[in-house]
Length: 351
Image 1: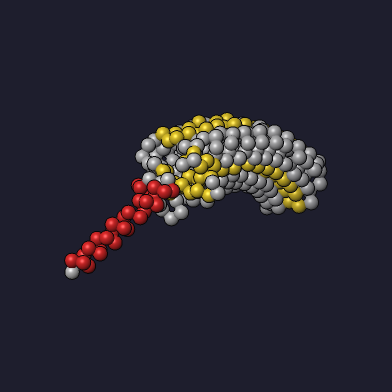
Image 2 (image 1 turned 90 degrees about the vertical axis):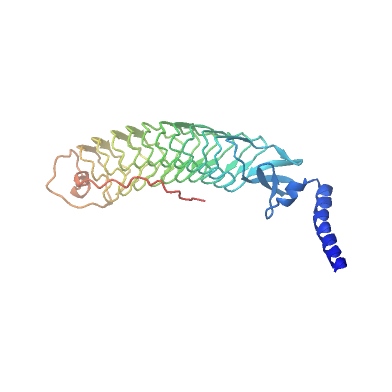
């Protein structure tokens, strides 16, 4: 009986001793050895993955509000911040080292961040990286970004201004959706495409300069930008997509270039401050209810040919001063559409 008990004790000692010896051999401390989580290792308040001599931060488990991400962990360079690594953490400020190249999807989503400065070493930021950071007010982006990903700053309700780097070509879907305090955004020459709903519900945005490099503005890109008063669409844009400026209630001036051939459904619906518009001869398609609810629109200049117009007929209205089919101009007098629902505050995930 005593021999059996002794054997059990020896086995237990070996079980404890072997990891200690191995951990010492490979350079990990004892605590970290026992805190391996799947393929991740722990270093202080960080979990990380080591891949081909480089390190990706996979999660943060600390309680600090100001965090400095190390440039190296155990001699290996930190090059990436992983998927949802800091999601819903209480951090208000984070310092990212110049070694980081990639920030993955949702990396800082729903954090308490108030500021973020992304070094120029970063070339890629995943979608929803800062989704729901409602206290974020100060942002500096890497000059080496070529795209702003989908939902990148979605619901950053305190963000008031941002400068988009000169190398960016594409502004992703919902990139600034519901940034309701955003008053100033600089879109650089070089951006070619603004994706759907990129700036929708930016209630405080009073003006926006769209550079001449932009060739495509996708559906609802500026829907519900209730404070915008004027917009100039650059020459080269061919389509004003569905709902692009819907519910921009203070929009009083819109310049449409000769390159536009198509005005989509509800493109200017309920733009109730719009009193006049010049439609170039190049426009050949105007989709249904493009100007529905524009009840102050009394002057439309157009002498082109419309191949396709979708709207209801109403011969009782004759106050508009232009020579167009009844099917087109009556759209200005349709009953107001009900406004879209206010955005909810649910914690949607977009990654």
